[in-house]
Length: 322
Image 1: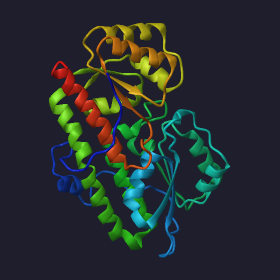
Image 2: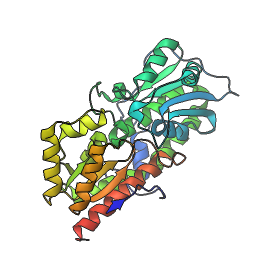
Image 3: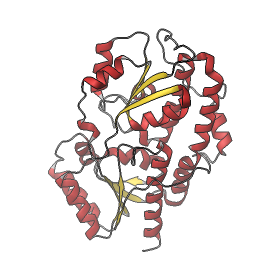
Image 4: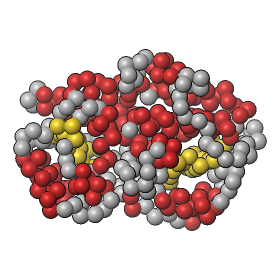
């Protein structure tokens, strides 16, 4: 059974630690003990009060969050947003270079995911430009799993740093950004609450994934992602998995122990299609996920909560033997 990712949901609920939305927002406000701090380097030149802050996000999942934080005070361009393309294979162009050169702030994922953007930033070499490298912020080195936006802890830390950076660029409007930050934390509550629900109900349940995109979220929800890491990493990097990892993955899907196969719809290969078919033949429910926000015009938390709802429904159906 194939369950397509959906994103038509409302916001609400509790955070991952069972806090209320207000508690979750307070826990991340300045003065509440968050370890993140403002980016180092020279103070950026603040735009005039009647100018909007020009922001470029390498990918639309980070772009959505900074847009919600900046509100009417920012103009955000998200470069990678095509739902039909593999973001790992993106190649920059002259328009990207111009946008990054003119931006007050640039947000990159890092961890080798968007090196094209880092090269454009380096070529521009603007000391007054604020650059937020999420991988560096959360301490994930190059060569590691780059799908940081699938980790709720990394999302929380990044949102806080985005807030600090906006205040750094535009201190005159700090009160506005504080209100936006509190509102965004509250609207992330249902996403965080659903993660907590899945962890409470299904911790330890065996699931599989065609690539490493799901590993962070699998850990956050307490699920046991059993698919071979070598297979998942190879697919994510566009390489061929070893024959041994392919056989191991096939055996797992045929064992009857795996409840769900998480299938990345933006990195489709003949091999992942084969695994999807094996899963279907063995009554393993397939849940589709994507790397970039789909549909591209919905907020980050609506998209992510939609994927989590599909996962939760699949796990519930398997638990009921449906």
